[in-house]
Length: 135
Image (cartoon, rainbow, N blue to C red):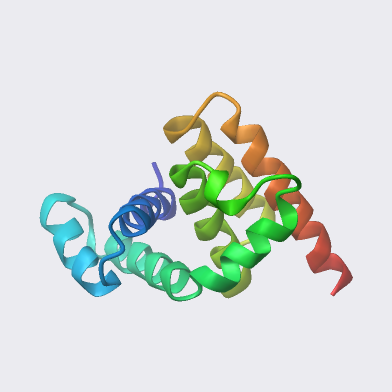
């Protein structure tokens, strides 16, 4: 597993915990890394993704709602919300190719969510990325 893939997995786990507990991001990060072991580079990238997505959660949630046709944000599984926030943040804030971000998000959904989650996440992120081409 690549450094970035593992970082995304850790960032998604932190986002999920943050969504469920609503504790301060900094405090959650400290607690998370007490039990999770990772190389310094992995931790750094995971923290960047987590902190950015947590900071921009309101704007990211608006984007998710806009592209999740017929789904209210509060009806989405918390793990799917975390994956979508993470992926949309990475698309917006990094130079990682969009296709890579989408593939990684779909893989996270397949691993951590329901059988249908991969297709669901792919559909929302694909709809979002199409809007980027028109901006």
